[in-house]
Image (tube, rainbow, N blue to C red):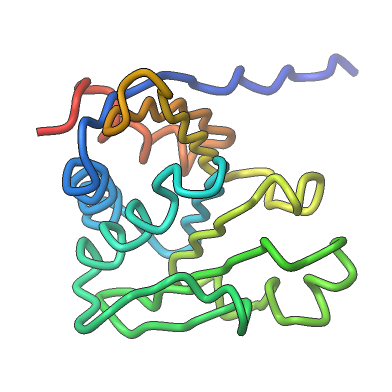
Length: 167
């Protein structure tokens, strides 16, 4: 029996010139998100992970304030689809993440946004969209969002990022 190769991940990059532009990128993702969407955000402190998460929340129609859930690990917000906003910064390993409720069967019906997702490497769903947010020290407001979509659901979702710089 011949093994069927998996399709290669789809990759790309998009520029953001401000926190508002990063939120607009997130809003596009939130509008296009479907049940089971998992966005794995990676970046240094202050890179813009929470700004992107706020945009996703707006795209999902989440009312009110959306902040980083650093001290409670997971915040759930009601919108067009439930938003599970995870901050893995304080987690030391995947077992701790499991105990904190980071992985929950309810997420299959909503959208999960994980800040500091690199701390959960190896435990993320196979089908997810990873977005690395890279700050440019020479241009304080410039961010490059480098994305990698694995799996069919997130390859389709990544198309909203393919049209280049945030508008």
